[in-house]
Each structure stands twice: as structure tokens, then as C-alpha cells.
Image 1 (spheres, helix red, strand yellow):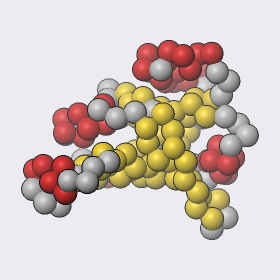
Image 2 (cartoon, rainbow, N blue to C red):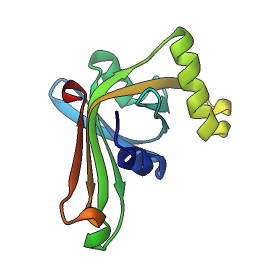
Image 3 (cartoon, rainbow, N blue to C red):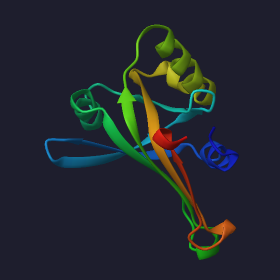
Image 4 (cartoon, helix red, strand yellow):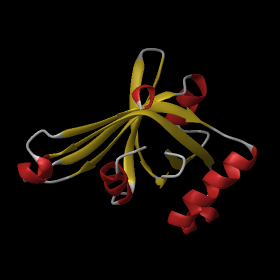
Length: 142
């Protein structure tokens, strides 16, 4: 079970930095996302001609970060995650698409593919709970 603090932080933001890697050359991009807490997945919409999509098709292992931008040290918050990015088909794709369009209805008017990121590790830093306080969720240790 994911701690509610993770869910609250994820739900309070809408842009993540997604990092992919192919051939020893990492790359990062910013994506709007929706989060499905029942399935613990991030959903983004991307285009086939982007670098990160081409790289993910070669290597689905990704990392992502979501951050609260602030100058106040006591308010610093951020989430880092690793996982697998998958272009699903069938019912899983339909469900992920509904999740994304519920948050971003205007995205129905744009071309692109739905990408699902299944995290295997989450780390939430939240200085409001104490300087450097971190919560960890590890799929292997749950």
C-alpha cells in the first residue's frame, strides 16, 4: 500500500520530468501526467516522433521526478521514481486513456500515444516533516 503522503503530493502537481536512456545517452523531458492511485501508475500522452518515445520503445526503463519549486528550505518537496514505461493496448489502454482525459479533457483533440509508467520505487522528500525527511516505497519490499 502506498502511503497517502505520496498520493497527496502526486495529486497536487501535474507536470513530471521523465528521463529515458538509449545507447548510453540519457535524456529528460517534461510531461503533463495523470495518476491512477488504484493501479499506482502515471499516465502521459506523447507523440511517436519525440526522442523520449523512440528511446522508450527501445528501453522501457525510466525515471521521473516531480518537484515543488520553492526558495524556502522548510517547504522543499520532491518525488523521484524509477519504473517501466509501457505503451499498452486493449482494455488497459482504454482505462489509462480515460484516466488521462479525465484530468486533461482537451487532450482528446490532440494526436499522440498514451504511455503508462509503472513505478517500482518511489522516494518522497518533504522538509515540512523535518529537514531531509524521506519516505520510501519499494515494490520489491512492500
